[in-house]
Length: 306
Figure 1 (cartoon, rainbow, N blue to C red):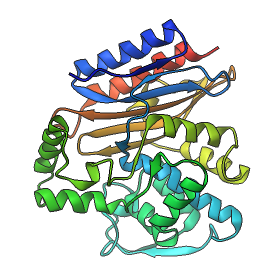
Figure 2 (figure 1 turned 90 degrees about the vertical axis):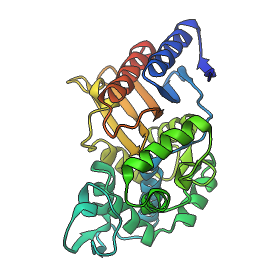
Figure 3 (figure 1 turned 180 degrees about the vertical axis):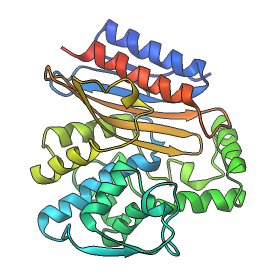
Figure 4 (figure 1 turned 30 degrees about the vertical axis):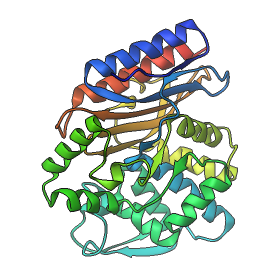
């Protein structure tokens, strides 16, 4: 049986972290969780250093590197690129779901990638800023525990290589391998996947929200774009009201259900959250897991706000 490693600055925070881990375990979910007040530094969570495949959460550091290139003048956000579905990445949203070629500006590719998690937009940006360059820039910034190793479409290529075009079988393999601690699908192996830890991701969010990385123009634009995400079924489900603003990015692939982001209150409270989960069930939809992620974010925010 897995025993989480908890973090918390005092007993109340540790109690909340333990309660969240217990709720997840009751649903058959293993994962990492970290929430941190960006101004007081108080935090709570568990297994925060564990490296996990990130799925589409990796689009956040990718976006920051692209925005940094734009700020340096190496990329023009108005530069247009034609995306042809015959050669682009697969996915259910955005340009990845288009049937005909479309010409889109670099700045709008960033919007598509972060607002609707468009895989084709992400891989088109990686044509302009290669994977190795993104990974190197993250290391230069001191973000070595966030690794970019492959294009988004490589996740689907590896799943198809293991299970043909049967993604139900790919999900079964992912769940089986999680229980056996092995990886038939390479992009679910943290040693080969786009991967990161909850601690590293919250650290990145803190630097983005406090203008402590890249340049203020790039971080401000990343904050704006993350605030436009359309998906509200995970952390945002409990962290969006008239007095709260949520800016986030989900990540979903086979049994992975993630989200990272920052909740900001009118009172001035700012809490960064990373929730990275792997489920033990062969279900493409798991509303109870999504709601448990949202509940964890709300509980953490309420105890961490001043």
